[in-house]
Image 1: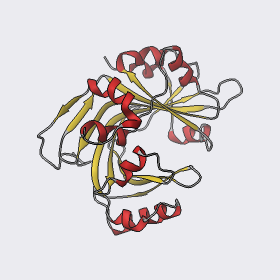
Image 2: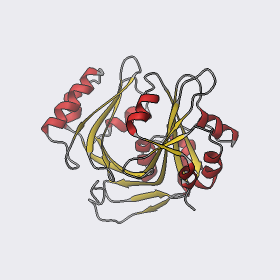
Image 3: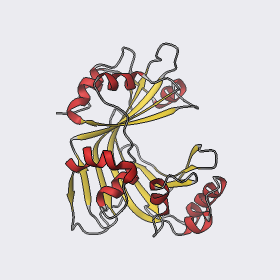
Length: 272
């Protein structure tokens, strides 16, 4: 059964309109891991006036993200240890609409998340990309920014199919948006593959008040979960790594996934 089939009944919206209505300069992000079998009931409960993003005639687009980390996994351990100054570097590829962008997400001294991006080609970071990452890491106060950026190497690929929903404002609130990721796949640098065909990740982005999709999820008994595609995926594929922040998600959801090992290294290419 297609977990996203219920989105077919929604009015479609373009990217410009989506951004204009729900820019959400100040927002609260909440993530949920939902069994795929429960998603249709949640989507059918969406309020009238909900729209789905459509690009090129498609409302569920394929994405791939190549994450980069140092040989000593400074990015991963920054998340595990909850460091005030931490970072995440990835090259995100839009497999259906085209284009690949390097994204550097940092959390600096004021605990503010900043995400900027530049176009990239391929899975490796050239000198320009390293310089760009260095500048953003330094701006966020990440210690040893240049040294970290120069040591970045491909670590993990995630693949998924994403639908984006624009939801009407709740009473006293603003419009909100949400992403729904299905066909979840993680590919380690050594070629090991983890798939979660029975789960979806929903991320809501709203103002200070919870959005309409949050409320629909709560009514169905789903609560926010601590999950990171990079951190949780690394912990699931490498059981020797610490996993405290994502222990609940790993034990409740990722244990139902399937891991295939022995696949040839290099399978993690974004172009695969």
